Length: 463
Image (cartoon, helix red, strand yellow):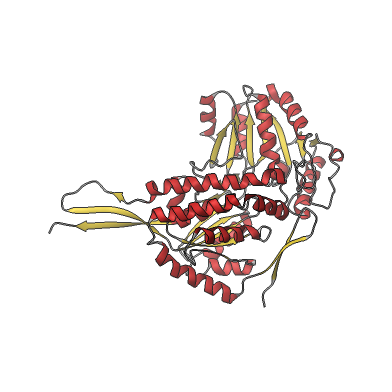
């Protein structure tokens, strides 16, 4: 007997998906099939791998409307935005397919008479991908496509909140003609997930999720001497300098803080504004936040949907209440958002001022529709506050001084540094974090490094 996975939709509290968890027999069969498939798939020419992966992406684009509706019902993002996730998946996948030939070809050593010497990038074997619900396709594609392009096989375990994402991948790869066993998915509980990480047949684990989840993955993989990629949390800061284009900064930072109801690892969670423009920025920011429409995400007019679960929303409410008790000031009246209902996933956005770093809302990950704004007097003060965090995923500066942007960026402990933009992954750049935001790298040419092992060929051709 196996337990049941039940996906409770934040839209209306109904059971949207129900599946059986994989039992031990299914797990054993999937691992065995993945191991056998490696020997076939790694011999498939790179051009053919690229063609198959490309056809799979074509299939997902064709199914975009259906997938978009499923995303909305599974995790609550407004329907007007969900198709954009599949477009983003396409952008990342196409890029990783395109750069593969340049990255995966043999690296030749300098010429040496009587010798042929090169380094081959060899597939690892079975890659176990553990993906989260908040961006179910954008987070998973970062590992799935490059793992397959490198010649590995993939077993995908998706969040119990978004299990249909795994099934749609499988349908797309089947339609594309991917050989049997090269891509598989399993619906798993926590114990079974940990059991697979510990299995000797798994050669790499790619995890995106919380810090406690990352700690579990590291502990389960300890002593196995395999690679583990960890893309974890964030408390991403923004710094608005006095020379910034305030209108541009307001528009983009509101979106960066509240898109997806703030449920983004690289969303904006704290903002520091130089004193000369503080009042103008706060006024513009608050006005724009007040224009959100909170409601049923299946309604095309809705611009802010529910959080994924009621307890997640209640956590944010608790963070806000604690800040208010310590002197923070709220700038949004939740009563102006008719759908806001304490104890439910429907939560009004909130902007807090009079905040400081004694408050958890400015130091601990919120992962919801709240942001704190602090006044600063200098670049040095902004740098100190931005670095005052156990996380380091992304950070941004809003300025028209390009040299200052680079100079400040050099001082910030972060994986990605933005100027005049935020909350975006460029597939041509390495996606990585520092401190408790994780370790490892996806995307860009460097994203292939952890998914292959170097194998040196040292051939003496003259005796």
